[in-house]
Length: 381
Ligand SMILES: Nc1nc2c(ncn2[C@@H]2O[C@H](COP(=O)(O)OP(=O)(O)OP(=O)(O)O)[C@@H](O)[C@H]2O)c(=O)[nH]1
Ligand SMILES: [Mg+2]
Image (cartoon, rainbow, N blue to C red; front, side):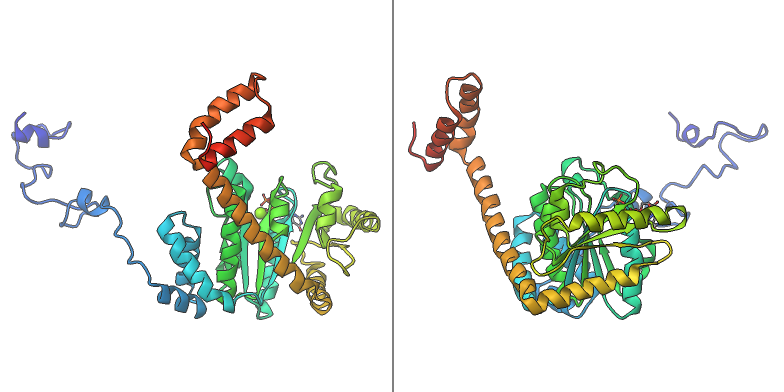
C-alpha cells in the first residue's frame, strides 16, 4: 500500500488533492506522545516497565522505621510480607533489630460477622484515640483472601477518615498463602508498627473458622462485636467464641435499634455469668455502643484501658505474651516440618501410591503414615 493511502482518513473534503492539506500526512521522523507533545513515542515512554526502586539497606529500614518514616514503614511491611527467600532473610534481620523497640503497645483484636460494624467502630474509636494523642495501627487478618483469593474485609477496610489521619496507619490483609502464613506476617507487621511508635494496634478479622483463634493468639485483648437481631447461629454465638473474648460489644445501638441493642447487651451479660472468662482475673462484660453516634465509645476505650491495667498488675498480661511467643515458635516449627516433609522427593513419589492403597482398603492409615515416614527418613524400599 502506498504511504499517502495509509495517512488518508476515511472522510476527505471533496476538493482535497491526493495527499495535501491533511494533518494526518505527517513528516516521517516526527513522533508524538499521547499528550501531543513531541518527543518519545508513547509505546516506549508509557509501557516501559517501571524502574525498580533501589533496595534499602538494613540500616535504612531500621532507621526509617524507628524514626517513624511512613514510606519506609510501608516498605518494611512489604518486605515482611514477601515470600522470596532473599527478602525473608533481610526481614528477619530487620525484625531482630526492631524487636527491642517493640512490645509497648496494647494489641486489641476485634471479630464479628461481616457487616457488624468492625471497621466503623475502629474508625470512630480510632479518630478519638488520635485526638487524644495516641498513634494507631490497624491490621486486617482476612482468611478468605487466602482461600479464595478474594477478600471478605475487602474495600470495607477503608476507614476513610481514619486513613487520612497522620496518627493512624491502616494495612489491609496480606494476600496469598494459608491463614498461618497470613498470621505470621501480621504478627511481624505488628512488631514493625510498634517499633515505629504506634502505641495502639487493632487487628480486625471476620468471624470465620480458624481466624478468630489465630487472632486471639496474637493480641492482648479480644473483642467480639455483635449486633442485635441477627440470628445467634449467624453470629457464631458459640460458647467457644464467647469464652475466647474479653469484651462483647453490641454495635448499632442507635435510632430504632437502641432498645433492642440494649436488651441484647443485657442478654449477653447474663450468658457470660455462666461461661469461663478468657483472661484470668478479668470478668468479661458486655457493652452497647454506636459507631454512628459515638455513644459508648468512651466507655469502650475506658474498658480496654482498665483491662490493660488489671492484667498488667496481675502479671497475666506478660505471661500471655510470653506464652504467645512460645506458641508462635512451635507453630513455625510445625509449619516448617510439614513443608519439609511433603516436599521431600521420596514422600512426593510414594504419597499417591500409598493413598491409593488406603482408599482401596489394602493398607491401614496408620501403616501408610508410618511408611511415609520411613520414606522420608530414607530407609524404606
Ligand atoms: N446504624 C448503624 N449502622 C452502622 C453502625 N456501624 C456500622 N454501621 C453500618 O453497618 C455496615 C457495615 O459496617 P462495617 O464497618 O463495614 O462492618 P464490618 O464488620 O467491618 O464488615 P466486614 O469488614 O465486611 O466484615 C455499614 O453499612 C455501616 O454503615 C452503627 O453504629 N449504627
Ligand atoms: Mg470491615
